[in-house]
Amino acid sequence: MSPFWQNDSIVTSLQKDFVLTSQGSVGAYIGIDICRTSDGFLELVQPGLINEILTACGLQDQSSQHNTAANMILTADLTGPPREHSLNYRSIIGMLNYLASFTRPDIAFAVHQCARFTTSPRRVHELAIWQIVWHLKATSTHDYTLKPSQFFNFGLFC
Image 1: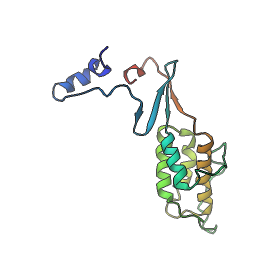
Image 2: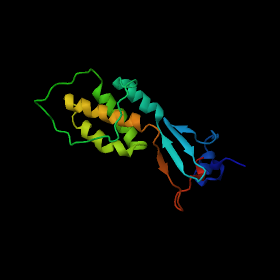
Image 3: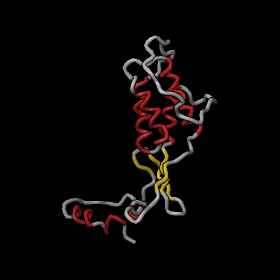
C-alpha cells in the first residue's frame, strides 16, 4: 500500500519540484502525542509539557490536586501580598497557553485570567497558577478527542 501523500493532488504537484519522503504514520507532532482509538477517533495529549510545567512550578512532587482549573475571577489585587516564589510567571503562562490552545481547552479560561497579570503578578495570581497546575496533575491522562466526520477524514494522517 502506498503512503497517503502519494494520492494527494497537492503533494503530487509538489513532487514535481521537490523530493518528498514519507515519515510513516503520525505518532507525535510538535510535542503532542497522537493515538488512534479502535473506533477511529484521534486522542491528543501533551504529557511532556504537563510534566515540564509541573517542574517549572516546583510542584512535580506535590500531592495536592484540584478538580477545577479556576474557582474565581481574578483581579489586580494591588494591595495584596506579593508572590512568595520566584517562578517564571510569564514562561509558565506561555506553556499553559500553548497547552490550552492545542489539547486542554478546559484550562483556557483560567489561563487567560492569569495571563492578564503577567506584568505584576501578586500572591493571588501565583496561587491561581498553582491551582491550574494541580488541576493538570489530577487530570494528566485526559485527552482531547477528535471524531472523524464526512468532511474530515483522519485516514490521511494516521
